[in-house]
Length: 100
Image 1: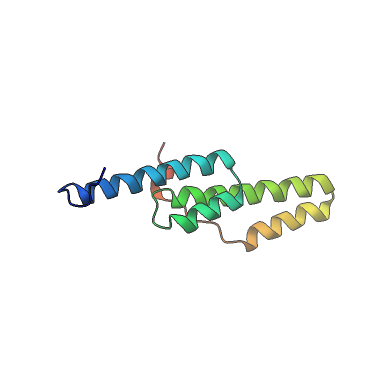
Image 2: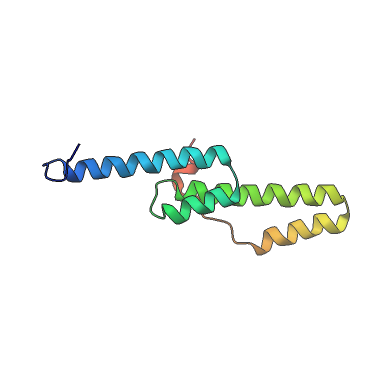
């Protein structure tokens, strides 16, 4: 259907963009990898899910670092994960994530 000359053109374009963003976000959450979240952020830099995506990236990286340290199970590996966590800037969490 051609909607380009319709009075609803701008609304249709907004709805399509919202649906594509939501669909991509759901796919990204299902994949749940750093690469998927980074790709989502690249594709939708103004998304309402930007903070959540950044938080998920950090969480996945933290989990991977912990698993690596736990696999090595040495005092040095645990110290390294602690030092890395201090050095890496954490993504700011929006105020709405603190509300319960």
